[in-house]
Image 1 (cartoon, rainbow, N blue to C red):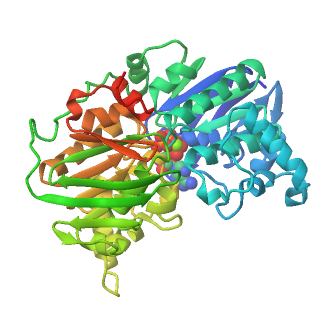
Image 2: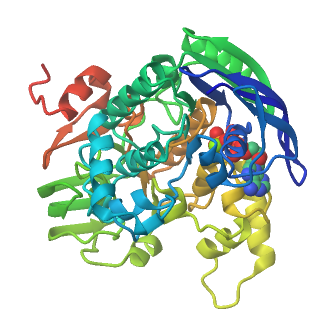
Image 3: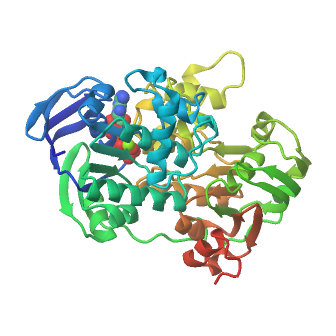
Length: 495
Ligand SMILES: Nc1ncnc2c1ncn2[C@@H]1O[C@H](COP(=O)(O)OP(=O)(O)OP(=O)(O)O)[C@@H](O)[C@H]1O
Ligand SMILES: [Mg+2]
């Protein structure tokens, strides 16, 4: 399907999120939609997929002017979108989600639906999608696979993916990219991919369109180099990341922030036994591994969100085994989860209300104070939004900045799941500068990331999770991305 967007405008109050956007997308091509956080990418894609209305402008499909009101109408026109944060219904099973939104809905014969689900998922190698699993138990990558299968079953001819590779594993990414290539280059679908990961864009896209502050600032046929894309996006090239921006040659302090002793943990797919770990103040531990290998369980155990099945935890020397999340927070821990709008931020609440939630413990909230704090943090963290913005109206990258802004300034321990998820290249660097500064002041940091370069660049030590085993790389500066890649795939000899 050939799509033409003509002079699209969209305002949110004073924000001109899409400013006169004119673009053409051809059938059978994969087009990358690039731009800094808040540039207007998601807004444009939501307009095209009916999740948002346009103020003015036109959408043309195969030479016909079309107008629709709502995602179902867009799907009827063949346009389907995977949102930046999954929209599926967590209480449902895979099969129930799959049939959701079909004519006849849940009444569709289950057997038929089941067969269709299995057929499409196996074509693309989405083998993990068991129809009877509750969606709540799926990983981000699996939920995404489910949504793609659902949209394909509904017959979409234009598939829009908003940051599909944030939060999924390297193996899921390979499967996803193969599926997208097949859909575009063999089945002739138009695929639109919003992404901050330039290496993904380079690997996958046939062309790119770049937005800045609501406008199209350029389009380009691929191939292009990373620095060409960065220049298009930011108007300049960015200097390479310095590992020790927080304090050159920093040594961790002798005091342990958190200690784990022979801890046993249940991960999504694995059981981890006898994990002992001591993280000192000012030390950064990176967790690497395929999705579901236990990193998420360790992160959550370190803040009391998952109870270890055996073993002991000590926080600054105090035994905190079995203590609540609240206890960990009150004793200097901070946690940033990957599922921003599920675990970290609360949809419907404003930025000020979020600030009140994390800073106001007394029964009567001092709103003036909360508002002032919010204003300060918005400034400091360069969040595009106001104290009264509802959190879900911020762009994805700005939600991530806000999540960081809500964390205590100088916690003993920061536990971060994919801290730069969804951030543009420049913002990701900026977040790490903030983290390195806190580390220099003595905060211990444990983080996970599917980006091996992020782990190699910022960790002092690395824990590699593979099939229930955790191996330590004691000096991260001596390892390479390739070596780490082999280790997370289970090649313990590094060969
Ligand atoms: N529902 C909304 N209400 C108010 N403002 C909104 C809403 N949706 C988006 N905006 C604003 O419009 C601008 C563009 O947001 P959009 O989500 O399109 O950016 P983006 O390019 O997808 O950014 P990111 O890379 O961070 O996801 C931002 O300033 C954002 O705060
Ligand atoms: Mg977005």
